[in-house]
Amino acid sequence: MRLYQKFLDGVPEYLARYYWWAYLWRWGIWFFDHQPVINAILFGQYDKLLKSTLAQVEGHPAAQILQLTCVYGKLTPALLSGTCNEVHLCDVATGQLQLARRKTMHGTNRCHLARMNAECLGYRDDAFDQVIVFFLFHEMPADARHNTYAEIARVVRAGGSVLITEYAATPQRHWLYRFTPFRWLLGRLEPFLPEFWREDVAAKLSGALKQNGKALDGEPCVGYCFAGFYRIMRFNLAAR
Image 1 (cartoon, rainbow, N blue to C red):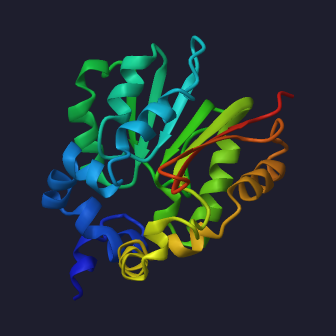
Image 2: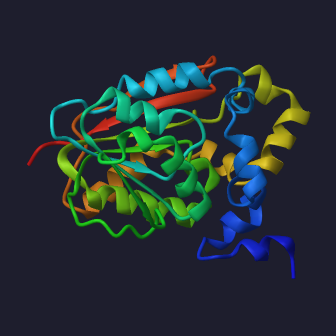
């Protein structure tokens, strides 16, 4: 038996195969949820990315927010501290949900955790005013991203929004990308990133929304970080 197969406890095969050490192994979960580690992985940009993401969070009273999968760091506690709204958080990994619960004890009554695969959510149609996706898509193969776009489009309401913080499109002029050994290493650690770099996120989301009888309201609001290496995208949906 290959090592990763020990972690196939109801999680997607690609997650166990490529990321068991980062998201499923208990010592990996402990190690990566330290701010210095997270900040180093994001080349010192974590606080900027978090601040820019929080600035785009839906703040109107009674908004229902879905954070699609747990993330290391302060995002979920910050969502609870910065709004009085309900925050729903789902993840396919039990260890990640346990970690999230420990970090959100101050807002237990407003933070609802559920074990779900982002490709097949158990929420009803049009359940949320905003869906937040923080550095998830680049860790998925193309078919998983396709299914996740479809689920986001299904559960977000017309007139709502989708907030995606991710790598930007292929950063051909960025010094990190131009440094071949680094680009090779990043491609080994993040095997689905090279393909995601070339993906038109707006077109993919727009197509999924169309399949659900919804549409984007104009162009997305896009902010960049670290000389265009990362981006924060807010997609507003047209009201019916």
